[in-house]
Amino acid sequence: MGSTTTLEHPFDTAIALTPDGEGRFLGHTAAEYSNMVGPFGGITAATMLRAVLDDPRCAGSPLSLTVNYAGPIATGAFTIDAEPVRTNRTTQHWVVTMRQEDTVATTATVVCALRRPTWSDTEISPPAAPAPDSLEVAELPESPAWLRNYEMRFVAGRGPFAGGGDGAPAPTSTSTLWVRDTPARSLDFPAVAAMSDIFFPRVMLRLGRMVPAGTVSLTVYFHAELDPLADPGRFVLATARAQHFGNGFFDQSAHLWTEEGTALATSHQLVYFKD
Picture 1 (spheres, one colour):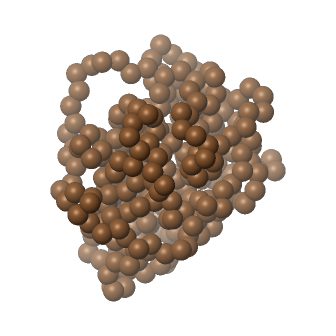
Picture 2 (cartoon, rainbow, N blue to C red):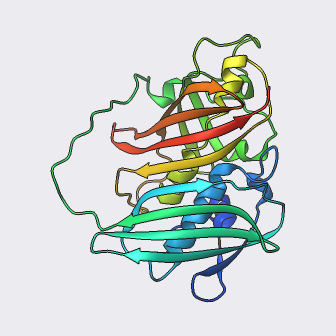
């Protein structure tokens, strides 16, 4: 399952991989998607998923992705090994490992599935939000660099990165915003995986200031089939909140929706912070 978008887009360039034997791929970090320390976690998640989608043994489309950020990823080259550990009639299970100089930097599991028509229902609802065109484009800082690859229009919960508030603690960790790639790009599974991690650390929203923080584990569940040839530039409605802060960690749940109100994905992550 190769990508149908061109490698001219910064996102596709950042997650591009070169085959190096069965199940092995070579890649390189992209300065355009760098974070405070190492790459933006969303681009790492998208890259791990890209390895599975680029493997000719891949069967079906992504159902879930779990990424465990085992250690810092240094600027430079990396190797990804992807292994389909079991293929069933409906699901296919993958184990994916990123290494730099024989040191494990990131691990992931991916479940792909052959989706068949069944009864369906969605019990969650998208948050109330005005049309994206009615909202101002957030003025994001120059650093970290990955922010410049997204256009964000906040409904609530800007946080310190996006000039929200006066540095005072916030009563809630909830953020809701419209987001899309810039330059425009059609949505596919790697893009949705990356967008599941575009939220600023919730602890910064609650405390009203910058604190060291980093994702330890991220899981994304994909709910919709995606047409990679769909019109580029469509917004995604994204909302996230934390459930508990304590002992140096907090959890976060997020929902992503199309402009029409279709559930794209839900995600959950565990984040380390130091206060």
